[in-house]
Image (tube, rainbow, N blue to C red; front, side, top):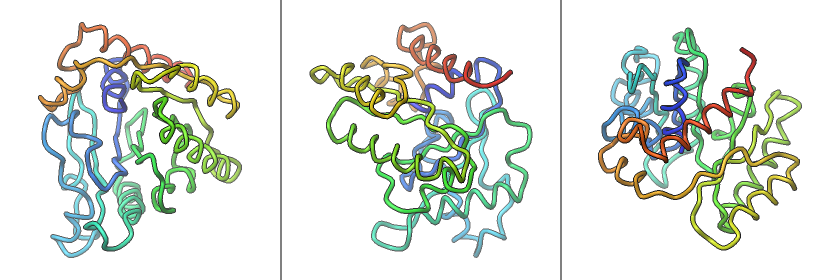
Length: 235
């Protein structure tokens, strides 16, 4: 959902930087039309240290000029996976990656397991958080936990919960449950994204729906979501 929404947002004329904060390094694949790009941690290990890297080593340009970076993480069971997020953000700041962009998207995995993943929230790097979830019980539980984390850092970091985005899984009363959770969190359900197999068809071709089927109904859903997010920001 994040990559499809960002592809729609760039079509609105916005300049975007994606910072993937998931060790799986899959936050930019559909924007780059490729397999997962080399991560900051992987390249730093190859070169010796992050200080030996240049910005062009880690930053790739994708669909319509979207800038893409993947933080990466250590091998499973070794080290702190959140370390890649901290290392990457510091490196990007020091090398001017945030210049000339309108939006920076930190794509963070949902089950926040350590403080490193919360860095965009904790250090005031992010201003708004959108939680992508479904109506399944574990997704609702994870969304509630993330909201607790946002509340913890809201005063110190200046971040706020922008709202919930529900990816339909076609479970019973899914829309009702998503709206109920949003209400309990004193937030709102920004958009209910219907399930459509065209998303999987696009992913198999390493493309966003916006690029693969720009005239499809599903592409229209992502454009509507992008417009809602864009409308919350002062012009």
